[in-house]
Image 1 (cartoon, helix red, strand yellow):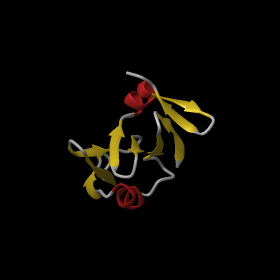
Image 2 (cartoon, rainbow, N blue to C red):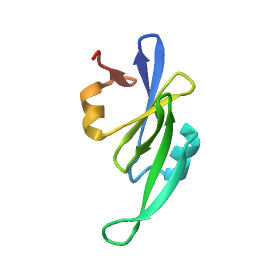
Image 3 (cartoon, rainbow, N blue to C red):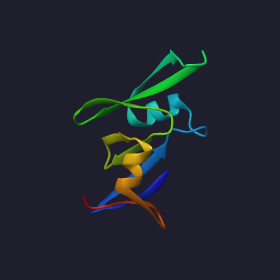
Image 4 (cartoon, rainbow, N blue to C red):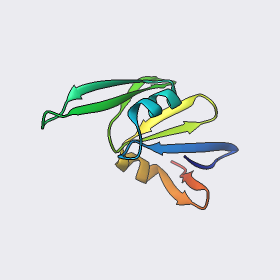
Length: 96
């Protein structure tokens, strides 16, 4: 987990990558995991993240960001790179 500051709130960002277990990410954000066959026939996981605007999918490579205690949102790698930058404590959210 990578804590950082967003205004007066701490932000935690976890990446759905080879080091993350889909079930652990889903448990962390209060979501669910579904599995479907990928292009090569292997199972591909999607973590369904409950957000303040409905449930959104997090795919392999995406980031799940938590603001406060219960505000979660998935970001694609491109969205994440545009919105957050590394800091000494993890990631800072850029003003949009």
